[in-house]
Image 1 (cartoon, rainbow, N blue to C red):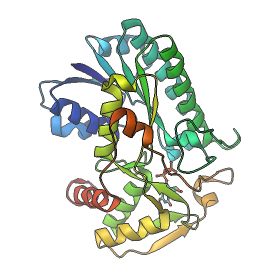
Image 2 (image 1 turned 30 degrees about the horizontal axis):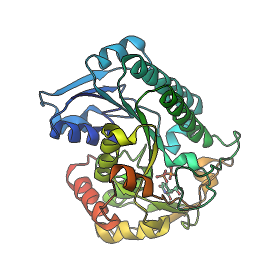
Image 3 (image 1 turned 60 degrees about the vertical axis):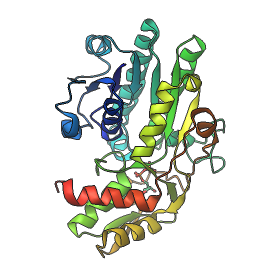
Image 4 (image 1 turned 180 degrees about the vertical axis):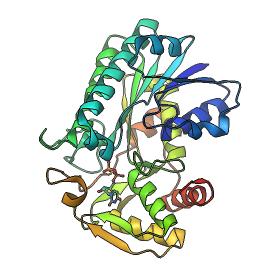
Length: 323
Ligand code: UDP
């Protein structure tokens, strides 16, 4: 098949592109390189099945060219990660909503199936954990700009479901803190990437708050497997899937794990949230996925343990990352 991956030069996107090429598909990448980097595609740069277009997914001419011959689309292009959203919430809303709107409309016109990337951020502070796809959502007020990201992704999901009701073959994946090689310490995959970077430089690991907040981290190869299935299995269409690994860990324990895996016994420095993100910041104290829908409909279950995934990530960081 010929597959379009928007955001294909990004962290998750570039791993998905490699996977699709390895399966024998031809891939067009559309990326404006605002968060992604062409170096992320170095491993497949000379692959005859790869075409890269640098441009904005919201540009109709660019999107038309990128969609030529496409038989499936993965829409990952977005402004992602709390720091980027806080830096410019307006841009995040515009890119995330307008981009998805145009991609869905173009796919609907052409009858192309599409998988839309969303985020566990849509659960907000959550009503219960582990959270399932059908659960209510609990977001904070618009005075806290963090929620702009959740709202933009939620609107993306609504657009996808509205198009599904009109017959578009569309699925949505909600990522739960994906980490691994090529994660950008300044963008998505933030905390693991930052700790790895800090460990490599011999600097203190910065834990925000008291570090008691928890997350569940999924290794990028697992996230790609779930995405691949959600985008290409007919059983996925019309559904939203949590893509996560349900092992819960506090950020403080994560910092300790990173120290022991890297063998870099740097200090842990605790920083108040207000110092890092400003006084109007709201933290998500817990986040754990319920994963039975992906298991039942996609036969997908993440299998890389946090220890194994962190080891693989460190291996890459140590050998490939330019500090
Ligand atoms: N965090 C941290 N130190 C850092 C970066 C992040 O303690 O240098 C914390 C952050 O406050 C959050 C968790 O790690 O509780 C995950 O943050 P990230 O930005 O990776 O993703 P989020 O789950 O907040 O979207």
